[in-house]
Length: 305
Image (cartoon, rainbow, N blue to C red; front, side, top):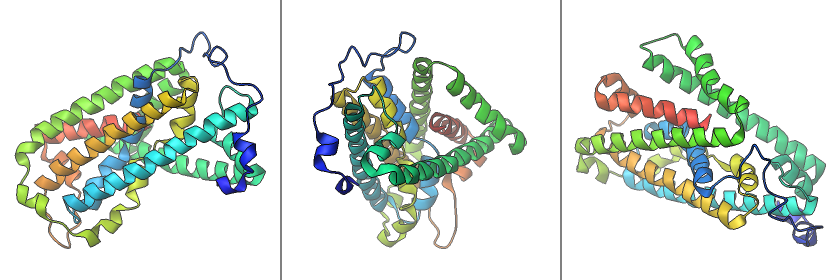
């Protein structure tokens, strides 16, 4: 999209350099931290995508899955860092403390580009929110012992959505950090308990042609870019801090996805022709391992929502 810009338009000296004093948040909205911002990236990234990953990669095996995850990390990290640079340059050009994705599209692509970007943004997030609410409702229904999903889904959405909408941003950031810590803690428990279940022979199987169905899952697995404008504002337009938050926040999910794949693919035999969801099988077992996966899944979808 940068080819549609005159080079001097986006990178010309700003009308007035945004000073750190001017970028200071409102009194009730303390500046964010790199750790909190990284947790926001990680919490947004680790969601419904990680739950869909095992079913899509089981047929391929560990080596193709790890290669796909690493390639996806490189691509999605690059897109987030580019969005951060466009965000800060646009903020300088427009002389604003913060800009949205719509503002960036309008400044770089014009009115037509802004309209198209808004339409895609709305469609993407409607799909994501629908998926998160439905998945979260199903998981909550399982946790409540088979409750009605039509009741559990709105209850799940309200339990996450109400605090996010009503509480101050700084409080939401702290709450998200706590939930993300819960995701990491439950995940560590799953990995520690699942290592003993791993069969090394299952990890050596590789079918590179079977990794194709997992390609569409990668953008969902690593989706976080829409929080980058929030990072830029919360970190007072400090590009170095934003870069650290993005890279640290995205590296945490990469390590989690790799360990997750080792445990799940190494403990679930693959039978050609069978369509199996390893996580559904684990949750249905009713043991401590399955219960941990259930609550990890709930927290993962909750942080993304």
